[in-house]
Amino acid sequence: MSHEITQLLLDWRRGEPDAQEKLCPLVYQELRRLAHRYMRQERTGHTLQTTALVHEAWLRLEDAPHVDWQNRAQFFALSAQLMRRILVDYARRRGATKRGGEAARASWDEALEVARQRSNELLALDDALRALADLDPRKGRVVELRFYGGLSVEETAAALNVSPDTVMRDWKLAKAWLRREKTRQERDGA
Image 1: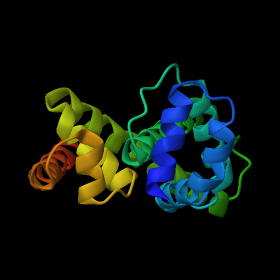
Image 2: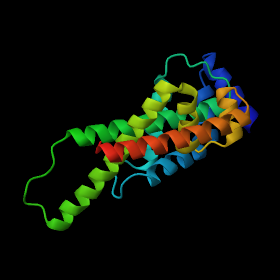
Image 3: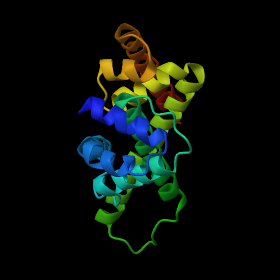
């Protein structure tokens, strides 16, 4: 099936009219798995559902101008990146809207505070990941593909066109850097 997906991606790149339609059923369950993995990290009661996240990512993939599709790993890497961006954009929009009035019950206020903290954690992680990507783009992509995308070391290596050993080195160094950044943010009250 991996070869079939790659072939359909190449057909899509060439502008074959039914390539996307044939591709969708082959990748849909894996996209749902990726979306579910993202949604597990979200706050309870998140209004965006797994299916909606998959569909929004698919729409963005369809609108992606002339992606030079290479293989299955690249497709899922880009899909994971889009899902992360969708959730971060959603959290930013949610944080920018005004909260409810003073009439809410204490339990509701507590629930809002927990949700706000989870959104803030997602935004802080996104900020740290962007800082890492500015410092070392490949390490940023490794974290994105492994943590958010759920790709294996081998799939990540294929998506980035590097060796699995390089992915493991980058993964270890990136995790250490992100831990230090989180500690710094907590210490600075950011």
